[in-house]
Image (tube, rainbow, N blue to C red; front, side, top):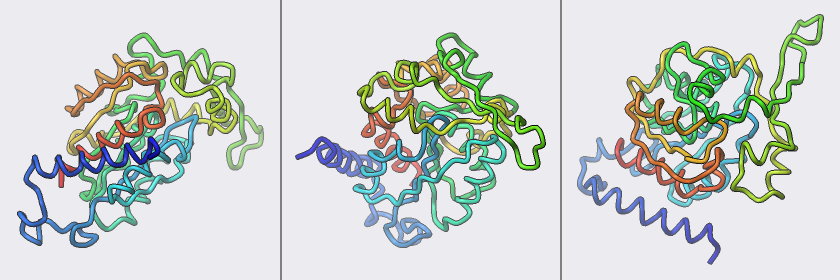
Length: 280
């Protein structure tokens, strides 16, 4: 049996135990209350939003575990251009989902879900996986330096790019993590062979987007869960604890690098399942 299969069996047991503890079996609830909008017995759609310097493939192992447990999953490509525009794009994805949604974000993806969830009554929970959970007016770059510990700033390489209609060709600036520093800063607990590929294929984050202010946070009205990787060198754990406490999130901590959903997919999945069990 592969490690992923073993994790899948453990996840199945976790889902069962959560349901039993809460007494929320389909047999015990009225049909109208137990059946999500997508059909009797259906689970909510989990929408996973990646951050900068990564893409949706970083959720692959988490997706496999969620699908094994019966959750529909969508992991859209986050544009990584600006906070408001990225949130509007993810909001448009949520618009296409008729039933309940659990919205989870990693890193800068946390800013996106914080804004994208507004106005969507079907978003039942927010899950922050080593992510930003900003208040109104805050940005990723400001929050990352709120407490000491982030090594991101000194690792960034800036590359200009043209914006639509640009005549100078240098209206926008993309931030990449220096390949020589990528593993130490972003994913120190992953094999070097893997992080070399991740560094080469990283999707940059617009510096303007990372500096853009967040809007009114959805965590003020939607319950949230937070998985804090305690070895994070992008968003210091102290910053994450501050944001999670402020948002009233249910907090779990794990010894992990920033890419907690890659190095610990079972832990990331367990937090999402806990959000489902508490809000179904």
